[in-house]
Image (tube, rainbow, N blue to C red; front, side):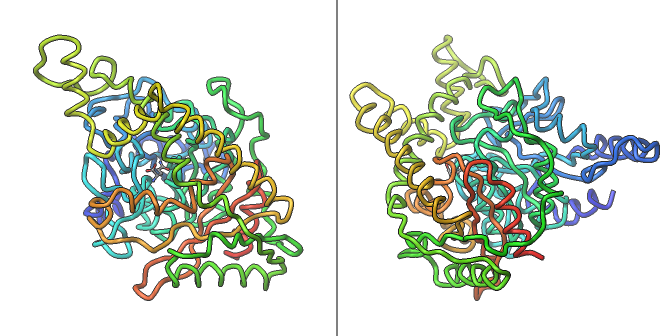
Length: 448
Ligand code: GLN
């Protein structure tokens, strides 16, 4: 009830797109009884949380913040939702996002933007901006977002919370509406690394309904947090601290490195020249997969359908023309272009080759260090409206996060101070495949 009251107080923020108050209260009572009977005792039992609106929830509208999915109520829960349910989670509702998770500001949402809790004239980041804002406002203790190229980590940075994208395959994608299937992962946004670990413990692990899910042992991350980083090698890739990085952000991240050093970690610097290729590679692959994934939204099977049409082709055409927003259409066009005959080899195939090189560069880096430390975004949160006019500039701001998805690695964003405007700065810890424990432990050491 306190969480629902808090949501009411903060609602001009636009973090939630659907509030399921009655369900939440019923569920809380049910958990209370289970707890009293000693049945349900994990760390998530009875804890209020929120889910990004691209995660399927049985009986609760799931729209990807798009007009084309208005009215879509999934007949099933995502595996992640099921697993959190088994742990006694209480879902308060669905949180706002960029339409189909395409964007970095939560401004492309059909419902309108979410505002940054630290400065309401600024964006919360994206695409999981509603999730980050809801946690930062104190509406819920954690939220689950999705991250294809930074959508958990960047809003966490802009809103001053901790967010983690796990290793690709660590969390089942069953029931996550796909943006770019080879890059998408769900993960928590929460107060700190320990809370993220508790959520990951509940949701990681093999799922027969997702062929790309990994057979990793679930659990143990929270219990494994020692906060001891003595002897841990923390890599600082020089190419992540060069031109285009706001001086206040650089300072904040390097200060975090010094704090970890003071706690016993060793700092190792090296060059990381593949950084220059990560943006074009990501935007080719992500757009290509998006154009294919989004072809299913045709007005026949899910959600919304255009009112007037002449025949089947016209129904498809009108539904997609009116149902998708400008950014989504831009991605579908880009993706169809790079996949088309004559351009496939030059763009898509080339991007897949460069993806391999990026993966290799990370493999090499992890022979020199245990985890890497970088900025999350080049700046702190921009003003509302600033990024919409210049999509290319917005794409470029994803430089520090997209490489992590291309290489399938775990990445965590945590707050490391404020800039001169009083806005939170985030730093990113990146681990080797299935190095969630190392990443979380380094973050925990910093947050102790
Ligand atoms: N901003 C990036 C994009 O628009 C990342 C989005 C995401 O991770 N879902 O594609």
